[in-house]
Amino acid sequence: MAENAEPLSITAEACANIAFIKYWGNRGVGLNLPLNVSISMNLESCVSRTTAAPLSDAADDEFILNGRPAEGDAARRVSGFLDRIRETTGRREKVRVSSENNFPFGCGIASSASGFAALARAATSLFGLNADETELSRVARLGSGSAARSVMGGFVELLPGETHADAFARQLAPASAWPGLRDLVVVVSSEEKAAASLSGHSLAATSEMLPGRLSAVPARADRVRRAVADRDLTSLGEAAELDALSMHAVMMTSRPALPYWKPGTLAVMEAVRDLRRGGTEAYFTIDAGPNVHVLVEEENLSRAARVMTDELGFRTIASKAGPGARIVESSP
Ligand code: PMV
Image 1: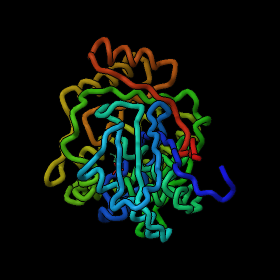
Image 2 (image 1 turned 135 degrees about the vertical axis):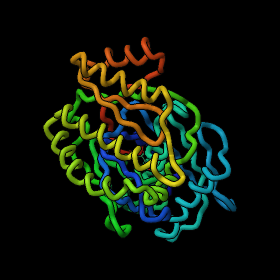
Image 3 (image 1 turned 120 degrees about the horizontal axis):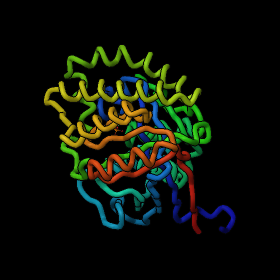
Image 4 (image 1 turned 180 degrees about the vertical axis):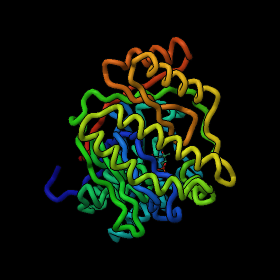
């Protein structure tokens, strides 16, 4: 690259993540300020690769998702996110964003976390914003709350906050801290979910269960932090299962209700309990959809996957802890 020449495009990659302590409920959609702390692990096998390139003289941003021009809400969400970065940097140029996921759509893994973490990395760099990981996590949070956690590698927590400055992510441990932990997504249904998490957060406060959940989360989060430090799957798994059930209790009792589970969801939950009864340590957690994530140690992965595939007939995707958001290409 010629000295001082601005890059024509910047490509970044980021992993999706699975939360052991879930973020559910925020203070208004605009800043995605979470009501409670959340803790997750990045998923090494589930990566978004996102390129940002300036468009000279264009009236609008362009968003290409998995090779196809995206319109409507998806395009507006990306453009609104870029506006935030333009406001901060005083830059005006429109941007072409192309994003590809290496994991299939509707497989139970939200691409908003990996997509916005990668876009935050690429777009801040394109606009010359010198953001460290903490600041980058604040920026990514504006796209999707869970994206803040995908900025750092390994095991990450997102602090709740009342202001933009307070709500940022920090790494609890790098991916190498627990090399044997596996997350197995069990794809119960690949239909698009009925209610996007973006709008679901604002319903949390309509549930009578929310106060109970919010008072229980801090102690559970402490348990998860200790479990990650000690590589203690029993403690991690018990806390993660309880947290998922608590979040879904809030979802099911919101007005309107958000009942995400399908019969297959319950079948997988029961199969996980059966594995445990048979001496195989496995625990479930569930995001805003019917699919189930199963947490196991590496040596039990194939047994758990066999049960889900051979006995229940569901597709699975396995991941270990993955890295944070990073620039992988900058051109010319
Ligand atoms: O980042 P959002 O708005 O998609 O919210 C994430 C919601 C959950 O996936 C259900 C929980 C979490 O913390 O990842």
